[in-house]
Length: 267
Image 1 (cartoon, rainbow, N blue to C red):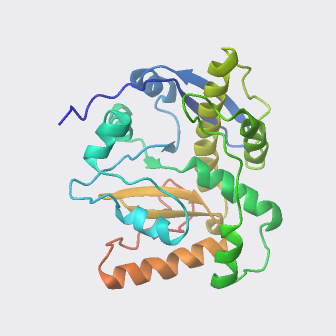
Image 2 (image 1 turned 90 degrees about the vertical axis):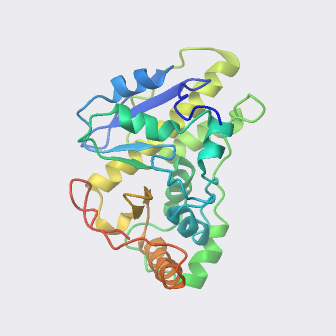
Image 3 (image 1 turned 135 degrees about the horizontal axis):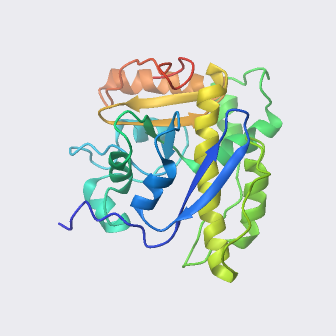
C-alpha cells in the first residue's frame, strides 16, 4: 500500500479566518501542508478542516459520523485508509492536524453542508417554528445549493458567485481576496477559497452561536464533525443517533462540546 503520509495536495488549498465579530480576516492560498500549518498558526480557538481528521483502522467506509450523516441526507464520501491513499494520496486531514500545536482543537467540517444550511435558513430564519421530522426531511431534500466544485479539472464558474453570496449570510466577506491567477486557475482558486471560509463559518458559529445553531457529531476516537444546524436538524440527528446506537451500528457517547468550542449541543 502507498505511504499514508504522502500529503501535499496536487493543487492549491485555502486557509481562511473569521474574527470574533464575524468578519473574514483573510484567505490565503497555500501550496503545501507545511504552508497551511504555518498559516493557521497557534492562535485560532478552533480549526475546522475539510478532510477526515480521524480514520479508525477498522472502518468499513462509514465511520459513526457518516452513518448519522446519511440518515440526515447529508452526503459524505466513504472513508477508509485505502480510499484516502487512492483518492487523496494519503490521510491528509490527519496529517494536517498532527502538524498543528498539540493543544489546538481540530475537527472536521463539510463545506457543502454549510452552504446548504445557510440556503435553508433564508426561508427558515432562527426562531421559526420547527417543522417536525417528516415535513423537515421532505423540505430539506428540496434544498439544492449551487454547484461550484471542479469537474474534469475545471471549476463550475456559474456556481462560484452564487455560492459565495450564500456564504456571505454566515459572515462578513468584505475582505474576500482578489484572484492571484487568471482564467481556469483563478476559478479553481475561487472554488478552494469558498471551502475555506465555509469551514471558518462553522468554527465561528460553534464558538459564538447559540447552542441550537450547530451540532457536534461523533467521538474523539472515531472522528468528530461540526455542522451548522437548527432545531429541526438537531432533533432529526438525536432521533437517528439513538436508533443507530440501539441497533449497535454506532457507538457515539453523549459528550459535552462546551469545553472551549461553544455551548453544549452535541451527540
